[in-house]
Image (tube, rainbow, N blue to C red; front, side, top):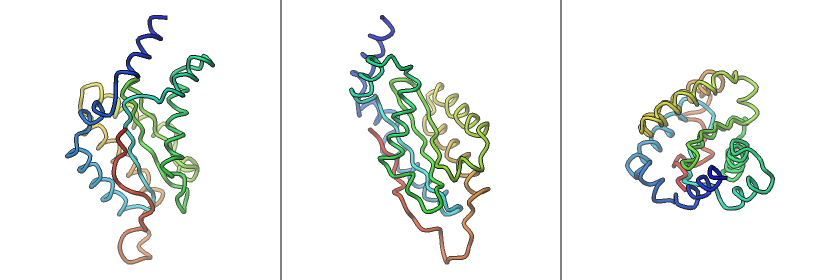
Length: 179
């Protein structure tokens, strides 16, 4: 019971200002630039989403259906993957890096084209590296490393073919989503 109340309190307390402290505007701009540079090397699309807390409907689902919080966080990451249209890429090669501050949770969601060619261990390693940096309070460093690891996977399997002049077509915004 105490754990549930503590969890609810964290989600009610944390808001956009906490996200802004974790990812200040200058950091968000550097991440945007890194995403843009990454996407010039491959045909994939990468989005970063950092949320302070879950919406009340997800917390209610957690309480009402007694679903593990890990499952609820995964559902939220999948919803953001959809809402941000990361799934809507020509080659089904979008990737979402999702962080939920209230739970200190990390989810990497990849579209089906990427999941067919990248081993699950690669995703687990990227999450572990990001988690270690996050634990030490190094958000930007951790997100940069995760972006580099995701980019390396996309370059290996979805390189910018060079058939077109310039970079691959840009399908999604590069700005991190901070909520």
